[in-house]
Image (cartoon, rainbow, N blue to C red; front, side):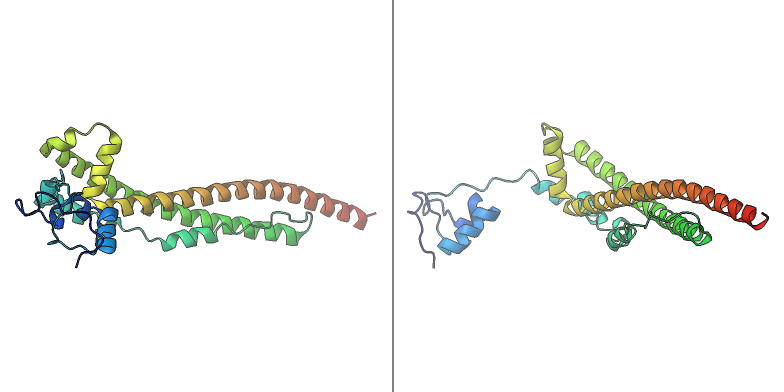
Length: 229
């Protein structure tokens, strides 16, 4: 039974106004508060705060068979990004020890092993980029197809004032598109960071390798001179 209710709406009896037809009851936060603090239900008589539930501009669109197919397409496995790749990429951010001592064969070997490891990491990052780009291409193609259908068939969409409103409408009709977009964005950002670090590390190793080779050659030259003097 409803409690803590404001006074009854003056037209509640004549027009059979009920909470189920009120926009506040249907809205997320306000509706939750009504149900929690007033214990109202769909059939509860409307109070003076009653406001008619206006038809959403999305009602007809949500029932559009083609829009339903497009909405389902955003959850297709080909658009699903494996987010475990984020952890894999982060594992490549382990700092290499770039403070090698110079001048011994062991130093040159250690530098060479580090360079090979970075090359392997860069190759793997490149393959992850390829997977991201493939999913991104399919996602953007689907977005263009969905946007074109909405624009061609629904004046309400054409009448929206700016990109923010159009994006809000798009997200409302295709909620799974948000997940795809965010997963692509996050994985791309991590891959960019890892690649930048690997490129920087590779440059540092080349400088270290060149210096170490010169020191090693110099020491070997001095050693040979001492052997023959």
